[in-house]
Length: 500
Image (cartoon, rainbow, N blue to C red; front, side, top):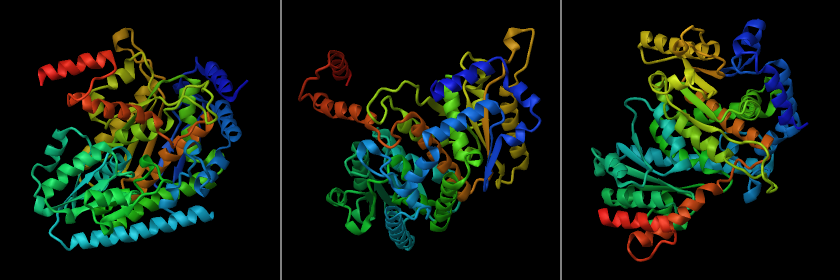
């Protein structure tokens, strides 16, 4: 019997035992199913497994080689097998490995940070007040999340983000800004990303001054050909994937928004979680338990979606960020050896901030036919000064996790709540650079360990390429210079032509 089949046997055994009963029958569960790492606390007591099922999950972790896989990641082994690369994003943020390659990469990252600090100091001595960061995907979502979460009123620079190739996005981003007091950063590893180059061209022309255009890229030649002087270009490397890159010079907009000192604290928080993931015993390892819980919900319970619900407005972009991190990393159907997978991989990740979402899709979470496991994320201490609001926010956070788990019986089926809806509650002591660094690193490593259990590569993203290739072929057809091959596309092109 495979490890996943064993998990399904436990799930069948537990099918008639609701999570409320599991909690009631184990007085210690609320504490024993929880772990803390620094300012980060996670409680798994309302997940639909018990101690024997957890034993089976930890056996899966051992037989999948979780501990060795974490060390391979940190030491710079070729964990990105399909592209023949390391994935050393951990070297960007701390000294968690003594391997020569990891130390070399950490030194390169340190030099890039020193150059970045000098650029920020020079910019601070000018009249520039606003920064437009141009990128897409991993060059946008991570920095956008962190800036939205941590930027403080009155900061030296206001940072704005432009990603979508839709011209309306550029128009709205630039509206109200003064080109004489604005600088731009173009972030693209290859400096060949269509959306970034098109938007970058709009912003460069709007600025009217190439001296205030900066670049972050692995392709200095292309960036220079665009008009960016080499001394204003920060490096990227092929050993850092885009969705794991906010810790690198891709974090230039973060450092501008929150300052280099707080950017360093963000890195330190992630490094603290890296050390925990590598060194903590399996049953005390928060990364292991988070990853195993995801595997349980997907492969034992067969649940096809996962919600992430931050109860802090400053984390409202976390679901968007995690959609890319999780679904681009784990959206694979072939094992590393090319064989098709027998197990289901990534569920659909989605979500939004509480309490807004309680008035949109929570109806489906409580009474819909599809069970949706959820990560609820709260912040213990708030610095906004509105204590009554914060107590109401925390009350709603606790109430939703309790109501989803316990449900409520009623003679009226329209007012009955089935309960038994699993969730994990994650609490940050406060929303600081350190705690946010830990939180993001937790999800990064959880994703990686899930990929290890499934035998897939978490670091390639070939699935995003086909649509881009087809789009490039269709551009001449939209210009009337060629015909499309696909019959449906030909009809649609005619419709576009007739209505334009």
